[in-house]
Structures are given as C-alpha cells and as structure tokens.
Length: 114
Image (cartoon, rainbow, N blue to C red; front, top):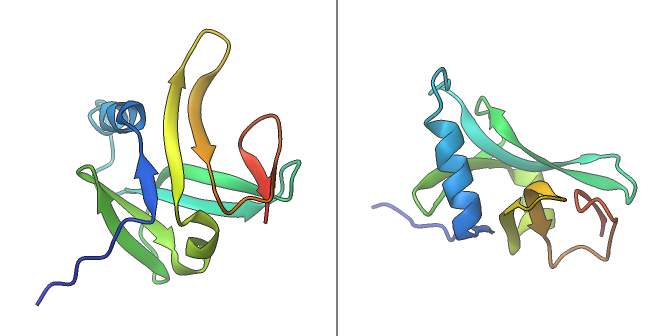
C-alpha cells in the first residue's frame, strides 16, 4: 500500500514553469533531485537552499505539481507551508520564498529567523 504524503512546500505557477525549464535544459543531470532546505547564515540567521543535489540518507522525497523534490527531514519544521515563487521582474529576478514559520525576514528575501 502506498502512502501519500502532503507536500510541505507550495510552488506557484511561475516557480513550476521555471523549475521545469531548468530540468529540461541540455546537460541536466537526471540523477539529481531538486533540494529545498535551510542553512545557517544570512542576515536573519538562516538562509534557504534551492538547487539540484544527490539524495542522501536523511532526505524525505515529495512531489508537487509533477516536480519531485527532497528535503532533509530535520529541515521540514522550518519549511512546512512555505511558498516558492519565481519573480521575473526587471528589478528582481529569481526564486522568492514566503514562509509562515519565519518570525523575521530580511530585505533580500532569502534569509529568515524562527
């Protein structure tokens, strides 16, 4: 019996489109997974990780909008309910993170505190 686990992260339509574009680029390594996580540092204490990486023993695998991604189990408490968007504006271009678990964020939008 397969157990369905609710995706802890929400991708906007723009983020899904950009991630799919990256996955379909020539030379993309199909052995890698999209990793979402956190690391110490940044102006508010923690920074987001979003990139392609190998799956590790402590990772949990999810799927949302047809995108398979991994999160280290210890990071889930910081990321549950977070929305990832893609901003393609003239002044700001890149992925943005909207995290309901953050008690403070910085101006760059990639760093937060809990």
